[in-house]
Length: 226
Figure (cartoon, rainbow, N blue to C red):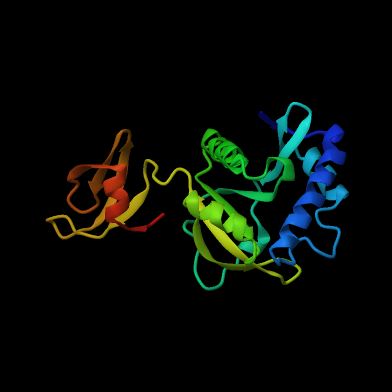
């Protein structure tokens, strides 16, 4: 199997894939993608022309599809019942769909691995995604892949969606972090100075330097300050 950019010759197969996805979504009681033309063929063509849509291909079969946006999402500007994990630059996954023929083979892992590796290649620190509250299969996948449920956003249509985010590059040189426990000087705010197997931090008050593993820093982290 391979993941590649979609092109115009894929349109018919992509639309057939969406038809399968709509039936699967309806089978567990969700009204997402039901009773309207979304995702439309015009939208798929727009995705293709943006060079941001991808197909998971098995020989000549389309096993999966997703659109990855690098643009800021207007509907993400306001989030209710929570807050985003970060204010980092982010990419967004849209229109994720799998073929019935391949369902149950954990192909979502290939698509998410691809998206997360693409984010790293482009130095994009975060991935966001939203989904219908009844989309239990996707919510289960997001939980397994450690996407954090951040709150609720609203589409332009007014429909409510559950909002998720995962930090792909959680720490970066020159980040400022607040730790749960203060340094002996009384300060608990540090600048990140070096990223490697371990992370070098410098106290913003006394300039003392400490080294922490990524795991230890995540445990001790209270807040990201930039």
